[in-house]
Image 1 (tube, helix red, strand yellow):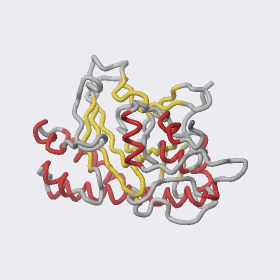
Image 2 (cartoon, one colour):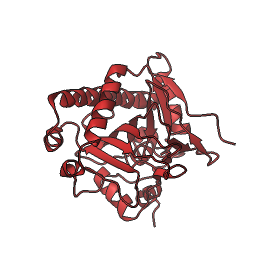
Image 3 (cartoon, one colour):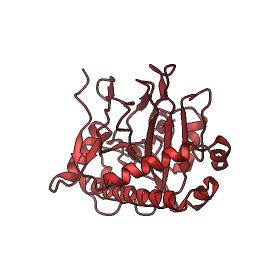
Image 4 (spheres, one colour):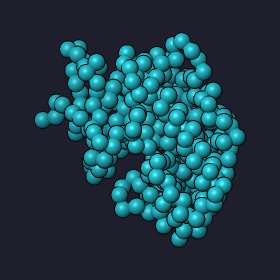
Length: 297
């Protein structure tokens, strides 16, 4: 039997916050945050901005198409006919994205404020993951981050189908601003295998762990499998900040998380290499990690 639902964590909680976050990452691979520090007004303004950008003509959005898998604009296609997404592939260098879309000064200001607020929140989460794992330091200092702005064109024909199919994220961690008016996110309970809907809660943000996070934790964190389902014919928007990996080194479990009872499970992994291997082998639900196993024949 599936459990009741994903944990809800108060980010203003004092004692025990780090341990609660780590437990959620181990037991669920995801949780919802309240009192996370990103202003509700900014969240609403960001939703309006991405809606206006995704309403631009296709020929303008296609200016941001990238040759590298997982980057740039992805339009609706036969595989994902109800989904399109715009991407700022490096949140520290957004000017080319702005210029391609001819973004206004107001749009640029809102996106900058939102990216900074969520990146700061990611930094806090990284420090709490370290603390809750018995470590010290700023885990995500200097790491690459990507922001995606998604639109689901749900209609009568889409109801009962997936907007995005089942997958895990190839990243370490994702911060999701889901649509508070249109449900869709579903996760797989790691124990029962049942699919659980993660209903939207206004003013909150959701977090999920990806494959790189599982590798860093030496298998302790759950890289949660999830999908986005169409329940009703309404347009759905979401905004995600992906914490990818460090620029100049590979990710591996810290020595403190490896011992005789918990031997090292994965070789050091570079994010770009991992994303390429995962895509080329069509292993989108976490199976690509086995190709980096220390026990791989």
